[in-house]
Length: 255
Image 1 (cartoon, one colour):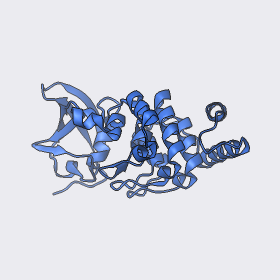
Image 2 (cartoon, helix red, strand yellow):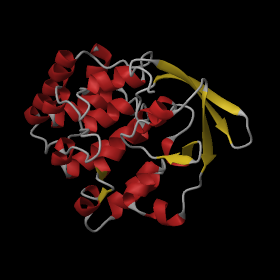
Image 3 (cartoon, one colour):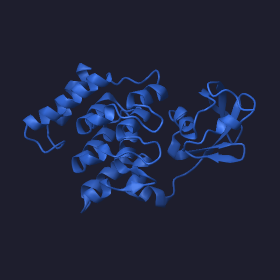
Image 4 (cartoon, one colour):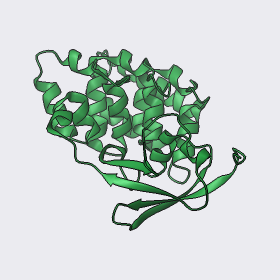
């Protein structure tokens, strides 16, 4: 008989050697995607695979803990190495954290827009860049460059979760500056809900309860509007203005 979906259970993550590497108390109704996200700070999704019993968990909406017995529930961690094929694509470079190479590839491409408009598994290149931006300056610069080429990509939902790139940024624990950048391009995403009914702020607060420091939605919208107005005042092509970096620094300092 299934347990009540509101119940939380202790999940122990251990390497194939038997060494426990993390423990998390998670809702029994957690999806596989939520399980991966819960340990993303110590076990990056792109270089680890989780196994429950003999079943590999994919980053999807299946609820594997619902059928698991006992506590703690032991989940195996299998380390994987990215293949040359997966890291040679534009999205592959972003996914595996090779943002410096991805940026170089974008800047030297004969058709940079084609790269930015890349799709893979229902996710956009901008979605991956938003997820990987975190608090890293290189990640921010990469996302800024991509949005300067195709700003409409900030308004594209992912096929699986129904995430906007702003949701992805919240999931990945991105800085407030990244949030302002995305909000300036697509303010509607601030109040948009994913397939699970969550806004970007709710996603961030769920996965990063102690570290999520974005300004409140109304303040974020205000900051995004100010950035957008500043760029228009400077007669810049959207997101290409030289003042963007200092404007974002000023806005972040005011938060």
